[in-house]
Length: 285
Ligand code: ARG
Image 1 (tube, rainbow, N blue to C red):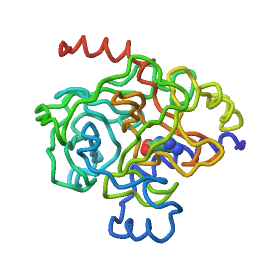
Image 2 (image 1 turned 180 degrees about the horizontal axis):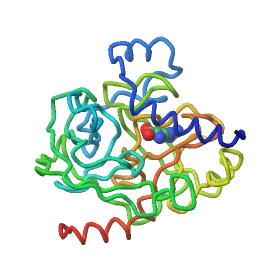
Image 3 (image 1 turned 120 degrees about the horizontal axis):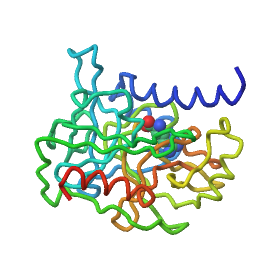
């Protein structure tokens, strides 16, 4: 097995670990205080759902374990009362009945907020085509509709133009506070600058095999040369927001918060034609 395959395999395994691990949440809080440099998320801060009211928790259970509880798997964003946007890698190989969407909550295990069902999953048909994590986006149709209250549950506007390089974006989620670490029961956020695709592609030049490129369907954000602030496992599918518009969907990265490798997101502005066409087909636009 070549080195590049090992890198590729470990990247995928990291996501799988986040999907399947039983996360000891009490310990998670202690762990944050003890050993995570810079504290929470990766380098972030505790926020409140009222600050990021478009954020949802996508909860999942295995099809062969119907007796299990639904557990947080990924993040997502509210586009309107029946549409949630998430990452394709969060839902590939699943069926709609394996998910619940929880909106208006601060906790990944919380029963505050509202819970709804996923009625239909629409995954990008060209997900992973040609390049790893290419077009990492999916639409979830939820039923019953999310009772938007303009406070803890609110739709986010989809970006139609690319964000400026260096613009500060806000990312949020219940993911791990360090690579391979514990996830956070409390909702966390972190602010990171946008990195251009050109610079980001150069940063990823020696990562993985030749299928790992920064393609036009991707967007990068991170503090280059410094690191310490990023999304991490379990944040996938969640929002990257610039100036009150959804610009990115948490997708992948080399480990988390490295100075050398920005986080990679699905680029909403590039994927807009696909999103708009699907929403039109659903006749809710
Ligand atoms: N694949 C991860 C997940 O499923 C997200 C990784 C994001 N990584 C990063 N360094 N920004 O949760």
